[in-house]
Length: 277
Picture 1 (cartoon, one colour):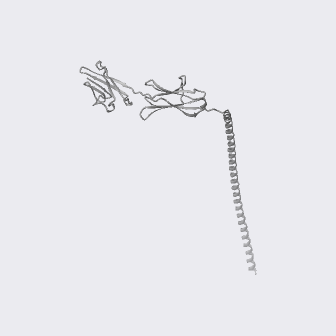
Picture 2 (picture 1 turned 135 degrees about the horizontal axis):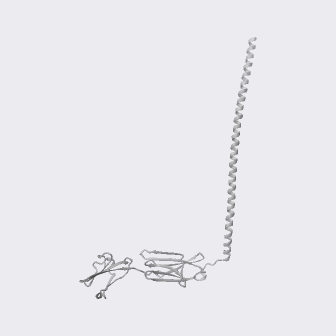
Picture 3 (picture 1 turned 60 degrees about the horizontal axis):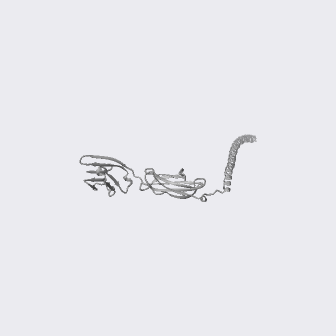
């Protein structure tokens, strides 16, 4: 008779029982000294395999092959690994949003757990944040926090549940009223005054800035107009100077011609007198 437990392949032996003895020679190394065949009901055709020191890698399908001198059978089963983590550790992290921020941490869960806050009546409370992340060993750790205010529940519990086992671990915390931040009425009044004055001051600043922009724009416009007028007057003056310069040159040429004619006339008269003498 042979009873063979194996994984995906027939040769991937988890545990082998043959000829009335456990055979460990063909067993996979990762299952060495971790398996035990329960043979109490073997005469009735029933055997069980016990695996010690369960690891995450043990999860998955297993096949059981039974063979005797007259028949053989094969069965398939699914092994699901689950682990309960540590008791939730609750810590107070300080004041936040007019309340107290409380953090709950727990590790060593498999598969991924569900974490939540509850009040005294067992009603769910919204978490401020939640982080379920894998650890280096493949297990999961949970971290959730909540902000407790003086007006809300001052006693809460953190519950982390394994959905596969339907089991959970829970821790509770109660915070006295004196630890909650108090709001001074004068601070409230100051806040109201600031809420009114800040928009008004912003509006006044905007108006002043707008007026400066308008004044600067008007000054730039006037400056540009003055520059254009000065350029126009400069061009007129240059044109007038050119005109007068040409008129003066023409007058000088005319006087020069008159002087030349007069000199020629006087020269002719002198020559006539010399001839007469």
